[in-house]
Length: 343
Image (cartoon, one colour):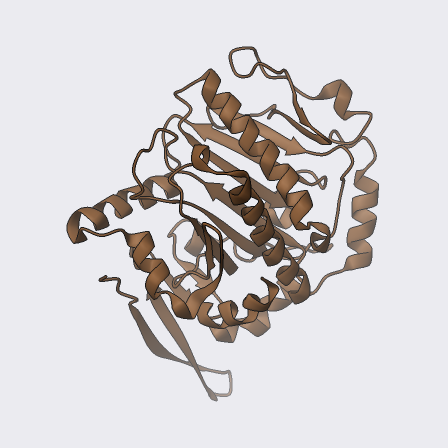
């Protein structure tokens, strides 16, 4: 099987102004596939956790209510101003499934970009993102990806993402998801594909199937073809990931999308229980032309700082974003044990 969960613990010492010794333990962990390093620092919890789970709910509700005025995704504004797909991108100018709208991002950053939203849902508490709501959004996103690919077979690498509330990078309070598709893989996906193929070439076995077999301490749940777990070397706060036993989005069934929606909803319910209000997630795929399962589709979801009048994205600094070294506060094994009850 040959997957190495490599880690090293180190003791650090700091002297206070009166020369009192304070000792800490940190743990460096290396991702078993890519060797990217994460640093687990439990002693930072007291310093950081207030930015994440101390919500100013009254202020947030006021902000959400104020943002409804002239919101571009609320009725009646949405029906008058949203962009439309050109004919070469999609047969429909706007894709509508029940109360879900899918339309082009007016400021695209990839070969194809679209917004997925509902005019009937503005701001909401993450506890209200139940399986049915998440499914409606994801189902519309998958339908858009299939239609875009049928119109342009060069759109090979799709991603579905969500940034909820300003600490997660959202420019609007109105809840929405986004679709990005490129002719070339996004960097994170490119690295996963590269290392997955290299692992199989050198060890003559599939990394992801092996991971599922031996990752018991960090397993959360498995439902259908979707395996939920905490990563050995996380890259975000309270990070949860999923492996889907399908190579790409075109192979997803309705049950796969429902199980994915159920898992996302479970994680968000856990986040709400912890006091979190903001999050990012991304759901990614191998190339839509993939005919092998060396690399599986998957998902990542992380909590972000809670919105407040003095919101500070304390994890947006040089170490995680420029050096790609993640600092996290809790051991993934502890998080997995805690979150299992929510599945």
